[in-house]
Length: 387
Image 1 (cartoon, rainbow, N blue to C red):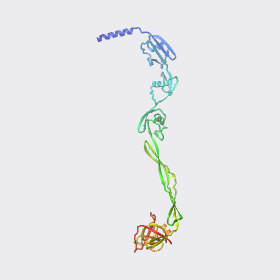
Image 2 (image 1 turned 90 degrees about the horizontal axis):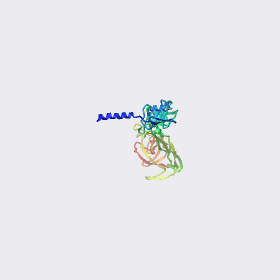
Image 3 (image 1 turned 180 degrees about the horizontal axis):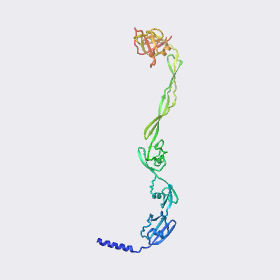
Image 4 (image 1 turned 90 degrees about the vertical axis):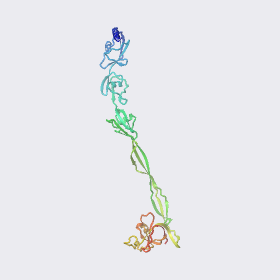
């Protein structure tokens, strides 16, 4: 059965080939000219010759929207429409090209260039081609942008890094920076790093202490003080600029402080008004002008240095009970002043106490002879006796 079918099929094909070809209507459109032929010819190059049309080497023939080889016969049909696409001369980046492409994009594709959306093409890719058209083309480049902890792959034909980032929707905002910088050309290695930079401002408040001024007042009792004007601390503020890069603090800059409110001095009056007071202590009537609490210590000629005994005082009187020492400022003010000291008795300021300087409270050193020495180390009330 198989050997019988093949000879039969060959005979049928031979008979069909021997059948005379029927004529077809051939329409050839060449720009504004239309040529019509009635022929049984199917080879495009021969049909072009029959129509008296001359083609250049760059011209193309189109059948049903597709280019057709000029030397290959076309399929049988009652009517065939051929369209001649004449080549036009265009210039791409200064290079002259002849092409039968219909659009700028198609012409670029014919030259082997793959067009990307990021490429710069002027006129645009969908622009119809015209003769002597000048086309400017800048190919985009692959770029990798490191930003916000990730890598983004983009393409760009921009002239600067900043423009490429803006096109990709990664603009530099505020203090943001890039490496290379935004005004530099695209890097050869295609690597761009964006650093997100922000600043915050904190305020540091500082109190400015007030100073105390002293004066005298005849309306205030001697030995007393009165605040005539309360001191008010001042207030200053400094701005601290904190800089962050990619969310991490990188610097702190403290700007010079600004005085918001100046301090107000405190004014204290020392009394000069003499008022005689009388008090009975242990059956003794004591008349005094003022009193104060003082921290009391004691000394005798040989207590400070057993190898060198000092019997004399700054005033020239011997060291003995009844002679007391005060700090230099109080000694100068009260030398010869009669006192009554609770637990000690009557006394006279007659010696200088260098060790009493710089103490937290007024200090008095009670004198004794070596034979009647009593140690002190506590606060006592000291009465400054009236004349």
